[in-house]
Amino acid sequence: MRKIMNEFLTASKLALKTNLGLCCFVLISIVIFLFFVMVPVLSIPGNDILFQLSITPPVVFVLMAILAFGNGLLIAMQVYIRKAIKAHRNLKITAAKSATALGIILSSLAATVACVACYSSLLAIFGLGASIFFATYRIPISIFAVALTLVALYFSSRRINSHCDVCAVH
Image (cartoon, rainbow, N blue to C red; front, top):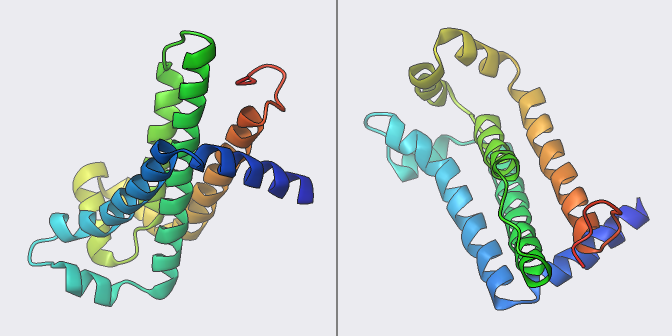
C-alpha cells in the first residue's frame, strides 16, 4: 500500500508542478463539481441551486468532491502524459483513451444521483428500467465509480513514473 501511495504522490507532484497542470486540475475539478450540482438544477423544473444544495445529503457532497477532485487530477495527469509524449514522439490521442475519460466522468455523474427528483432526469434520458437499476444499485455504482477513478489514477501514476514497461512516458 505504501508503494502505491508513493507512486501516486510522485506522479501527482510531477503532473501538478507546472502551471498548466495545476490550472487544469483546479478548473476541471470545479467544473465537474458544478456539473454534478447543476444537472439536477437544470433538469428539474422549479429547482434552484440553494434548494438543491439544501436537499443533498452530506455523504453525497463528499462523494461528489472525491469524484470531482479525482477526475480533475486524472485529467491533469493525462495532460502531463500527452505533453510528455508529444515532446518525445508525435502521437495522437486515441479514441479509446478519450472514451475512457468520458466513461469515468459519466459513471461519476450516475454515482452522484441522490434524490428522487434526480431519478426523474435519468428517467427522461434512459427510461424506466435504467432508472430503477440506478435507484436500486446506487451505492455499488458509487463504489465502482470511485474504484474506477482510483485504478485510472494508479495506472496513470505508473505511466508518469515510467514504471510500466509497455507505456512509459519517458
